[in-house]
Length: 189
Figure 1 (cartoon, rainbow, N blue to C red):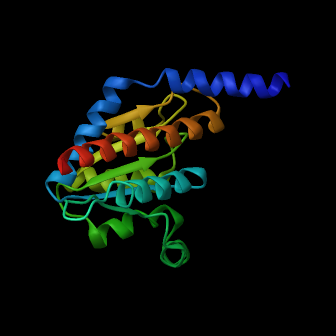
Figure 2 (cartoon, rainbow, N blue to C red):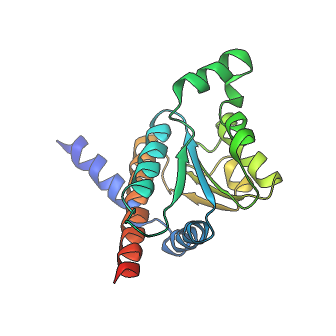
Figure 3 (cartoon, helix red, strand yellow):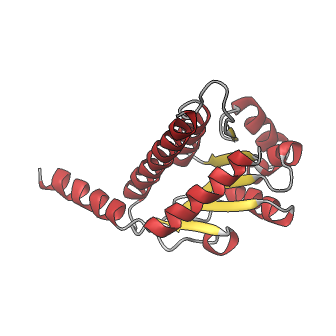
C-alpha cells in the first residue's frame, strides 16, 4: 500500500506545482483563438494522443452552447488511417506536420503534447506552426526537452515520472474545460 500512497502523493505534488500564471496565459491564448474564429490543433503520441483527443472533445463539445461561438478544435492524433498513411509513405515524424500543411492558417493555435518534450513528430508540427505565423503551446514534463525552447508557451509539469506528467496534463485539460465552460455560461446570461 505504500506504493499506492507514494504514487498519489507524487501526482498531487506535481499538480500542486503547476504554474497558475502560465495556465492563465494559455487560457487567454485559447479564448482569443475562439473569439477570433481561429483553429486549434492538438496532438501527441501514446498517452499524450489520448490527452489530445480528450482536450479536443472537451473544448469542442463541453463548451458548446446553441447560438454561441464555438471552439474550432481538432486532434491530429485521431485519424489513424491518415497517420499511418503518412508514416508508411513518408516517415512517422511527418504524421502531424503533413496534416497541418493541409489545414493550418496563420494565427491558428497548435498544442503539442510530449511528456519528454522530444517527440520529433510533435516538434516538427510545432516548428511548422511557428514558422507560418501560428501560436504555439507545449505541454511537457521532465526538463521540457526541445519543446521548451520551441513553443511560445511551454507548460512543464515539474516531475520526472511519465505517469505523473500525463496525469497532470489530463488535469490541465479539465481546468481548461471548466474555465471555458463557465465563460460560455456567463455569455448566455
